[in-house]
Image (cartoon, rainbow, N blue to C red; front, side, top):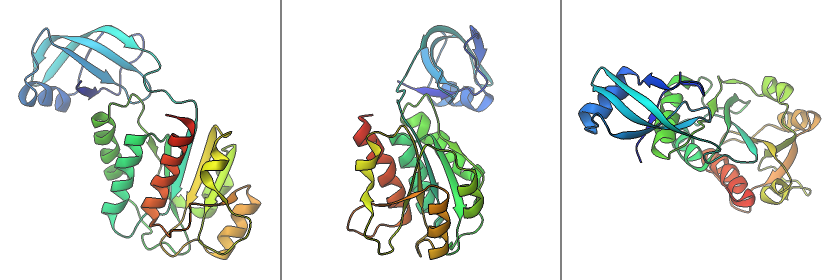
Length: 237
């Protein structure tokens, strides 16, 4: 199954064209021709099976054969807020793997100990697009613009809010055990230097619960992926 990305398609479209880049890739690289079937998604939950009516490198026109409802749809939402890593490759690794597993929203947050204080979201979105197509997702995660830690916690409205940190604390519970009955989840992942004590205090005031990711100290991108995979494992998809 080869998946193409067509962000402008809607439930009402019967015939539509792929973008010039997607059309060129389909015809010149994949050798798709008239009469072939393809799958395409708008990245917002709509997946369609379509037959090619016109195969041109500059315009691939298709006719919808089937709309696939509830394709890989999950019954929970997970939002990861992560301090961008110093090495951009590590952040992109997280974006790719989290997209493959299944995540709804990602927000880069700038914290007191952040080593990277500016993040190129357009580059990150290209990583997500590629991973979403490769892993056959009908819904691609939203990558928000970077914001300060305080702005994020003040505006977060997820029903279940968790904060993973490395500071000594007696009451931290393993994150997966708290996810079983949670359907609208947000997890905060700090920088390599961890959150500051003040950030921990402010997060608690905003309704975030401190959690443990186990006995090992994880890199930021590994901790963030752990959160995504924990939800996937506990929820079953």
